[in-house]
Length: 322
Figure (tube, rainbow, N blue to C red):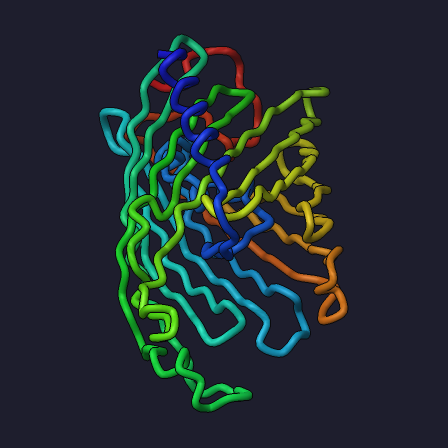
């Protein structure tokens, strides 16, 4: 089984390194991928001891008129027989003429590898509504590309994920826009009227938890984003937990920003805030971005229970999937 998992990871990495031409990434950006990893990988569904309901808001390049804004509402839980289910509702204003709202529904299945490790497979369907705002100030009002701008369009795609995890570590990958369906936006007749497709993305993620003492845990983590047509972008973070209640973090995103965060949990509620300091030429427009996340953990007594990327404490060594 482990050899099979490693083969899948090698195959996904090989596909991700194929980059024939430039193309913009089409998924919304987040700095708190470790706070709510379910948004990045459907295999996470149902792997927590609780049922997390999470609201998240990001304001990119705050203060810049028309800056991108993203809002998400997500939740996932476990069912019997090692099955997990979850859903995401989101609104992503890209900061230009295009806005995307959508829903993602999916499930996962977890398999024991041995007494301390497990692997989860996840698959979800993504339905997006694309909105085009043609009320723009343009240099050429007769630009043929604008004549093909649509008001609204709907597209459907898929999202696959895999995660190998234990009580102290997790690593895996996810492939959003698996089908590469059309957005419904069309190019001009000069370009042949070709459809704009959703480009397949690849995400590689992982973390490790090192327990320094009974009250202090250090958690390095990383996320690599790449499409079939763009170079990789790397997020690296170091988070420190104290008394299983509060944490601080510091990290960076290549060719983008330095990231600082703080958060914690009190009872069934979790709250976190991340501040991005822009390190590219975009800092002339706005030097910072803000992201806030609020989670309510609903206790549950049914379904399987396991540790995952989002569990806060390293448990005693025992089987993680019961």
